[in-house]
Every structure is written in C-alpha cells, then in structure tokens.
Length: 358
Image 1 (cartoon, rainbow, N blue to C red):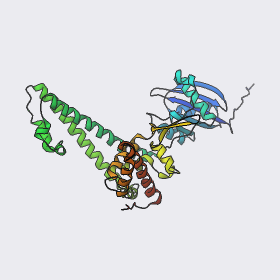
Image 2 (image 1 turned 60 degrees about the vertical axis):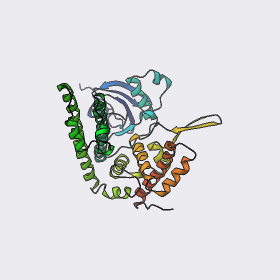
Image 3 (image 1 turned 60 degrees about the horizontal axis):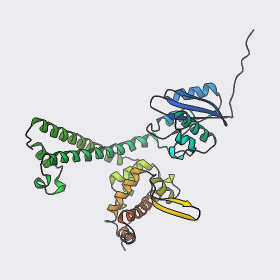
Image 4 (image 1 turned 30 degrees about the vertical axis):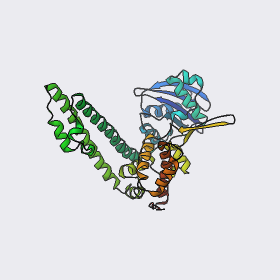
C-alpha cells in the first residue's frame, strides 16, 4: 500500500527571513506572515538560506533583510540573483524596543529584523551596481592610503625630534618636506647606534612604499575618470569652484546617480548637513549638524568649500556675511550647502556651472 504524500504549496504567501550577519555564522529568523516559524544558526552562505526557504516554503515569495555593515553587498547581490526580494537596512533605522537595546543578542537581533520586515517598517538603503561598488572601493582605498601616509610622516618627524634633529633648520620651507631631496637628507642622517639607523630606515621604507602605492592608485583613478562612464560628468563637476578630480570621482562613485534624491534637502540630509533638533512641548532646540550622515562626502564637501570661497566671489561674499554672526566652522557648513546645490544643478541639468561675478 502506497503512503499518501501531501504536497505543501506556499504560492501567494510571503515568507520573511531576517538574519544577523557574522563572519563565521548567521542567526536567522523565519516568519510566515505574522508568526515566527523558526530561529536557527547557519553557515554564512546565501545559497544555504535560499535552499532552506525553497525546501520548506515551496512556491512562496521570499523576503530577506540584514543590516548594512562590514560584509558589504555581496549577500544582497547573491540573494537577488536567486529571485529573492533582498533588503539591506541601516541598523539605526530598525525599530528597537528598550528590552532589545539593553539585552542585545544575535537571536533578538534576527527576530527584530524579521518582525520589522514582515510589518513593512523597514526602509532599504540604496544599493549601487557591482561596478560602481568596485570603483568606489578604488577611491576609498586611496583615502586610506593618504591617512596611512600622513601617519608615517608624523612618526618620522616624531623620531627626528626625539633624537634632536631639526627639520625646520635643514628645510625652512614646509612645502619642501617629503621631496626627494628631503628623503635623501633623512637617509643620510647619522645616528650613534645601528639600531637607531635601522629604525629610521624602516620608517623611510614604509613611507616610500605608501607614496608609490598612492601615486599608482591616483593614476588608476585618473584613468577611470576618462572612461565613458565618468568623463562627461567629471568635466561638469570640475566647472564648480572647489571641485577637483578626486572630489568629483568621490561624489560620482558614492552617489552613483543624483536622481536618487528628489530635493536638495534630502541630499543634504543624506550627506549630513542638517542640524540636529530636539523638541519638547512648545520648545524646540536646534544644535550642531547631525552626527548621522555620509562622512566621506561631508568631509570632501567641507574641504572643497574652503577652496571654493577663494575662487567664487559670490561664495566668499556669503561666507563673510555668515561669519559676522557665527563662527567660521559653522559658516563653512552654510557654504557647503550652497556648493552642494551647485553640484546637484550641474548633474541634474547636464550643464556646466558658470561663476557669477558680482
């Protein structure tokens, strides 16, 4: 006698999976409509999660969500290729109860994500294309090398001061520091012991390596900027005062498309140029700019603003007016918003910026 087999079919039903991502494992919570089905641990592989969903909920419409973090977007790309409705979310945007804040654990986190996903409370972050992500990494790698290069310069100068060598006497002009002549001078310094010489030369070798790597990656960025993907937009951005090649490429790779933002206010909010506010009853207090934002773009924009006020008379006039009633560091934030407006204009309208001379 043949046993009767019941075929389960979840066609038309939504299945939700929230998971907490770690290097060696994922904590996953599955919800069917509004009820928790199961919470379990699995290896960190998207195909294992997909096969589990397909095996246990055949025919269902699968929705997944995880927090943005160190793992990037490769999980999202993989799940999407399987036909899963994948979502990557900002951890700060996930509704969290007081108990979940004070009793944080992976199981609670995955349940929190699954619960919010099933109730429609999550807003996904923007996911760039694979190519844009790789181009973005090139710019971010250069930024990291620049930081490392700055650190090794400080270490070398600290070493010199520690042993009584005066950089200012040998090279009064600071712009000559780190030139080839300066490096030759460093390599020729006499220290009493062999250990001191080895220490200094190890620092010099690290500086040379970082400088070579930085120059090479800068050449790669310059080459990338001349491709069809970027060339036209880079040239447009460089018509804006204060915007150079690296800043232009940083904006293009970090934003990918300016059409993501329906207004200047939303773009300012994304970058982090809006003030923090606190309100209680009929009282409202406005503070400094919000700590939440895109640090890379905000830093690049503020640095460019200091350059822009020296090259754009209208921006300089505005800066001086702001400076009459606030500190320069706050005034430059106002200028950064104006500069961002110019950036948005040239990208949206595909027109170069024309500097207006009063």
